[in-house]
Image 1 (tube, one colour):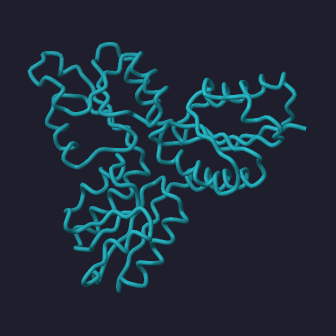
Image 2 (image 1 turned 90 degrees about the horizontal axis):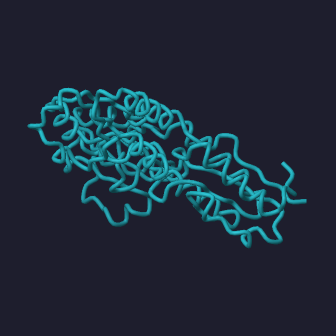
Image 3 (image 1 turned 180 degrees about the vertical axis):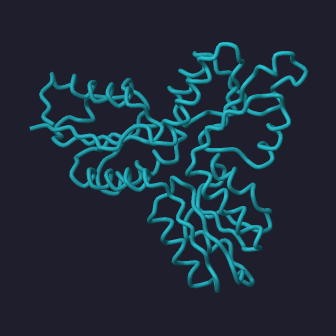
Length: 295
């Protein structure tokens, strides 16, 4: 008996849904030119949808002609991952309406870095170097006062002659709690005064837990989400610990042969994956077997 099951909390998380709704609301105001500074979320299909509705994507503020007469009527949407301190200051100097779609949970590590950085704590940022969220977080403390670390094994490459006496540890909101815990446990042994701020959002923890539980019972896991989505990549890594797992973005990537002779099909999805994509993928899998799938 072939079965297909999707984790309960698949689809947009709170922060992504909030950002999407803010963007849609602003785009309905036809009086404004709406700029999107970077991709609003890490999902190509949603970004394409917003662009088709009129959002003008820009990679930097330099692309906006400051002498244009329409700027006073324009809006700029800040992505869900947030932006760095310098860009934030620059935007405020533009004659633009600011629509801040930064996820409220992303502001937790940003504020913590500012607070403890000002108190002269050394800052450890657990996360992926180069990720937009981490780029924003790290900008709130001087480069000489911080270290970005993606897992505890990297400390072998960053040996301190003298470990800082006091430090704070924050996390990218989509990091695996297991990775964060190992980093924290390593630092506890080395730092005399360590403040640990677990800034991984609840939605991330819940989604990873549900994915792990479903993967343990599945013959294959289909992981839906953008190729550049950090939280989707972590769901793929978790799934691969227990079973065969394949990441896709749309139903057009599915192949029937993946499911031949398999009974338990599991589906999980990143926080930036809209429900309509999940539904299309579920329906496509069902179509491979003429509806002979039991929930």
